[in-house]
Length: 360
Image (cartoon, rainbow, N blue to C red):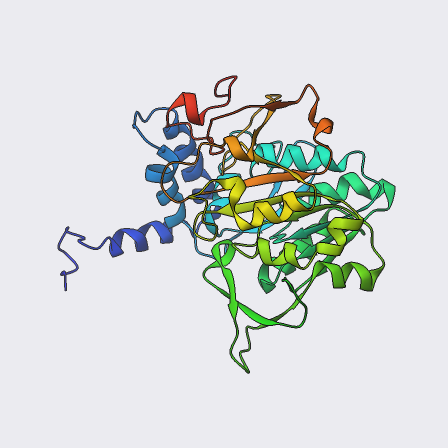
């Protein structure tokens, strides 16, 4: 054991404890976070400064019970727990009142798809409402609802709180999981937004029930115009349980794929998930985006056809778009590109990992 007066801190425990104690003072924590944001403009590092330097320091100031409230430029208010990169990067946003919470181009695409919509929306993995709340605000005047599935009880509570905070009566919160069939007992394995669904043992108090999209739609008499899924590898199972919905309502779909769960070594368009949607008449595109918070201004939403996506690199994930009428993409704010990565990364090869218009 290292003596208390020994300046060495081989495992970093004393430093972590010291940083956490500093973070217990909200005013001091605010000043330290502001200092970290300024430091990001001055550190010359051939890598991701947020991930390697300032982010870990910000994390050390917090614990998972710390709560924040932040307001977007359009007046949308969010309360959230400091857990994972989503909360951290939102908190450390460039602007005091930013345009979005997480994944700028995904958020813009979802709002674009929802803007003309006269049907309900279903969101699997709604978290604290980082995108679902924005969709609900856009749909409220048309009296259309956003049906949110979030089995994490703490995040589901935060989601309901954010709906109330924004005076939204069209957010339906379901503390259930989406799966290929209903009444399966699953539980979350992992921490917060990184948790994936696994089988639950009998009597497990953390278990939750599943529901298929087809059963939920039929049981509530819905017509769905958009489905968004970010459920850590359960996307295929959820879509298998939506076959009737996809055939009859023909909703647009925005969903995540990740190399940990989808084997795309033979080509993304040849994966079982993509072939399933293609057989139902969908055209598929990878969506180029930052897996973070970053202002993108009015840069076009860049989409890569599923058979022309650059996929090399370590295991990673990204969002995809599936829709039945690709001609709808012929708009000034959408650009079809080829042979580039869907992962926008400021510190990687610009030819593969930067927007065609360059970094903002």
